[in-house]
Length: 317
Image (cartoon, rainbow, N blue to C red; front, side, top):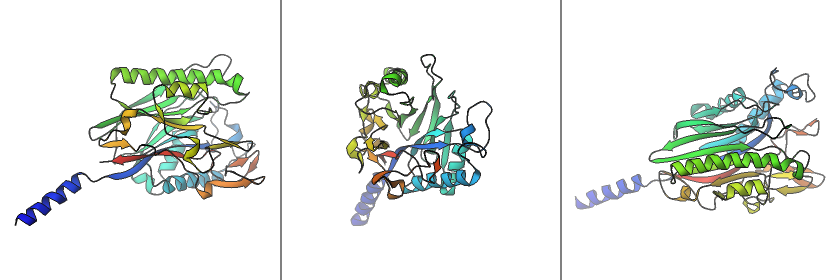
């Protein structure tokens, strides 16, 4: 009788300490537009009669591709998305395959002139959304408005955390000309992070996005003053998340507060940053391995994206 009782206690203890491993990911899906003309934004390039001859067949092929990536990453707890046109295209992602059974959507319309936004999808069977919103910042004139930073506060058991999804202004015009725009975005993000930490120094934060800057550039360094980078050139096979003129670099970032690695009902695994360069995401161009993108110049390639998805490991207890 004592043996049975002891065994029951051991089994109960083991069950209470059971862990589940998952991830939090970010993915620049590269120009996910619908095929409908938006009179308020310049989406003409991605219309059936536009330059790209963007039609329903190509659109739903891209939706299928994004779902394949999500499946290959084993359905992350959260996925930050950028280069999506609107909430409808995000819902098309989560209404596909098994995702519709559990994923929720957080999206806000930005003032980007092309209609490009950020979004968050999350496993609503595991996470509860406490609040969400955007960080909007003014670009130096005459620059057009940029994408808002989307954030959401989540809860799992006794653990709360904030996720931030970024897509900072592009490098168009060169580093010297474009960097001031990214500095505006960086200072806006840092101000938000500082306000969160001042209100609750123990709050966990995960910051992710395509920053259009490398880890050693000034704008990402501003965020690194508060948060720990999780993605480096050694996080993947090719030394980066994006390839520009044959050179690999880390443009896609995940950073976290150090507190987020401390054990709780949900926490980040240390040194778990990963660039997910699955074989089907890679092609060869002029003898070199590059991301298999949707378009190469004006030519339709039928690929996935010009960026690799990134992730960090997450433990659920």
